[in-house]
Length: 267
Image (cartoon, rainbow, N blue to C red; front, side, top):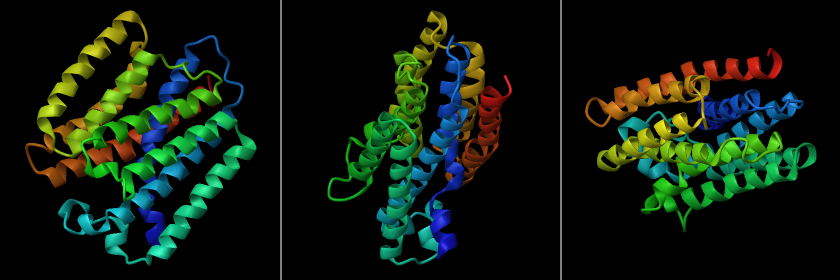
């Protein structure tokens, strides 16, 4: 049961948080600001990752019946291993409570508020009776919003919510929406968002809101990992999703982690 609960947290999916923290840290590196709290940054990264592990467990519980009918999701933890709902709720409750308590005691209040926003957003997205996941609002409240909150959680630890320019917040929000829609095989809308993303990215590069090094470190690896996700709409979906998962949640995650440690402790 413990192994199943741990598996349900999708540990490798912490790459999403790690990616956004690296993006923020590149802005700190290229700014006059001195990073004088590297261990707070690491603590924040761990807390956000643990919180999302708990929220992924909650998501898998609420999607259990529909996931059983989806051959691509048959590897999900609660399908392979039967765990009583009361233990899942207890597990999620312990993780969420621990994260919030630790953050309130050791980090800034505004960081804890952002964690609370992550929790609220995911609950109304996943849990009945609201469950925005089953509505037309799903793309707006899923990956895009969560990406923005991940960026914000790191920015506040560096004492500047807009250390990352607003234009880049918008860019990453659109990118998150596009990723969600690609995963859901909404090809027509994805094409539109891809064009918007590309135009906005070129604009941001031209005005200097992001430089080529930041793009290469924090955006390009994730973009490359979405290529098989895009092709999953036209060919073997299961195979392409698996490739995308390996590229982003494993290979790129190692790259992002190395980048974070280099910025925090080496240069």
